[in-house]
Image 1 (cartoon, rainbow, N blue to C red):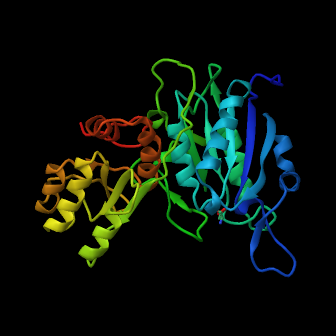
Image 2: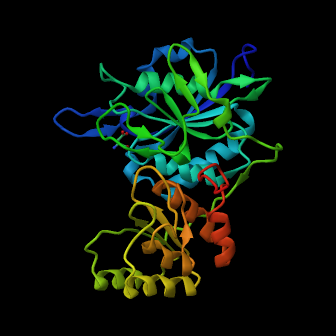
Amino acid sequence: MTAVNKNSSNILLIYTGGTIGMLREKGSKSLKAFNFDQLLSKIPELKLLDHNIDTISFDKPMDSSDMGIKEYQQLAETIFHNYELYDGFVVLHGSDTMAYTASVLSFMLENLAKPIIFTGSQLPIGDLRTDAKENLITSIQIAGLKQNNKSVIREVGLYFEYKLYRGNRTSKINAEHFEAFDSPNYPPLTESGVHLKINENFILKIKRKKPLILHKELEDHLLLLKLFPGLSQDMFAHLLNIKDIKGIIIETFGSGNYKTEDWFINGLKSKIENEIPVVNITQCLGGQVQMGKYYNSEKLEQIGVISGNDITTEAAIAKMMFLLPKKLNYEVFKTIFETSIRGEITEEI
Ligand code: ASP
């Protein structure tokens, strides 16, 4: 493949499914994914872009609720095998689980030096009031941005409604608004208005160019436990006793607090003693866990619970899926989890 002019980039557009490419079939009231060629014919504007765009589609485009480890692997492999051929990648994906997939991909692809931009839409591309066109066109432009022959964005991003965020910092926050995503603990990487404003300081820096590494193995025996005031001792014990749990994420209140009762603390302690990582993340959309700030989180810190700091739930799950197959001992797992490896967490200074 050759670039047609100095400013043009080679972009691979990967279609996985989602509302962007869905249609309402006659006689049905629900949306269903449709063929990719039909999708492209709905955006003639793509031909006006300076970039060379190749496309590839999942055999069966899907609602993103159906995505799982198999699809993460398929997507990561597609990018890995095409990495040298393209300057950037745009992934069309359903918005429901986009923040999860973007987070997982950020861990699976180590030493990434090119953009992988996730986007989608709240309304199908065929809809008169669709948000799909702007999302897709600007995503391609961002993926194609180069300076001194190097990609400007060198990480996994998520573009939606005029903002590009770091993918592993995002959460879907609204099921109806066009502004469906937020990144409460990290500023946008670019903002699109009359001009495309690039927030250089927030883009992931690469120290030295190293070959891309694909981490294909992921673990799905995780337990995510959103704690609530009336959780019963029985239920908690029951959940912790589920066979084959390899890692536990607890979503606590505020800055990492929950009950100080023995049944809660000892339940978690026994898991930690058996080398099962327990990570504490907050239920709040923004802010961070600070174990020890209140009496109600002191004991968690003392028994060795790992701090998720300001990581999102999506990125915590992704990081655990990625780290567990590495079979690290508890202390090493804890140190790596509490360290930023893809810009997913704000490290304590
Ligand atoms: N249910 C759709 C999906 O996640 C919603 C969307 O694309 O916005 O695939």
